[in-house]
Image (cartoon, rainbow, N blue to C red; front, side, top):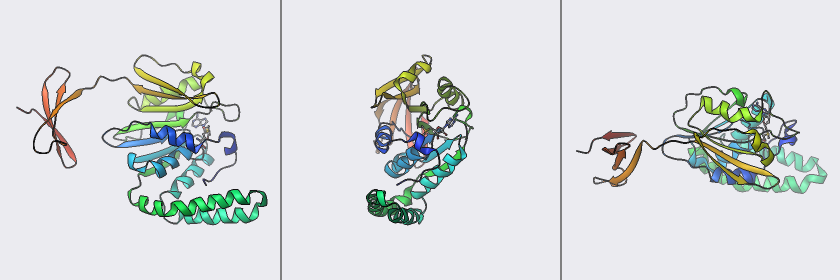
Length: 265
Ligand SMILES: C[S@@+](CC[C@H](N)C(=O)[O-])C[C@H]1O[C@@H](n2cnc3c(N)ncnc32)[C@H](O)[C@@H]1O
């Protein structure tokens, strides 16, 4: 269903894997951002916009290749801009007629688009904002986002699609240098794991995937500044008693959009 660009055949990614990865991203309180810094066609950000729109406040796509960024932007707009999916449906129907051998495939794509259109109409009201821009993942700009950033990508580890401008080992440290609190979830080849070096200040998880690949999850190891020790007041869901590292107790009071921390006594 998504558009492709010249050269994108070299780095196809599976929608099923993208759904699976995004399902396991732990989003917490406050604004949440999904960022694919190796976006290619924008499949992962598009899946985020379509299937997990309620979990993210912003979805970001970047890539070193401007053609990839243009393609990702066009694909992400399918889920945001009214009329874009209709335009894609027209393109699909043209292909359905033009490519005799693939008619059935394109017919199935057209059917799928027709099925999801009503869902998109409803979702569009509450879509996260989205951005796409050209950048090397080894030198990401500081965007000044206030909230938790989740970097999710399949790394260019293969022979068809290589990392440009550096080594795989440089990717995670470069990102964490700019965004130290970000969570990182990358798909890469198991044998490429030996190129990744992390110090003890991170928690690292690794899950196996098919075809010799793994999902690597990296997150800064932090001691919680506060722990929840109870609830208080008429609205139990909103008034919480927290205890800081030295055991002092505070009341966390939610007043509309802002949260006030105050001593309960
Ligand atoms: C494996 S593909 C990503 C495929 C993508 N998930 C999709 O579904 O189309 C890897 C991408 O990394 C990009 N890339 C290579 N080196 C890069 C770098 N240093 N910084 C950012 N992107 C880079 C390539 O242009 C390519 O689009």
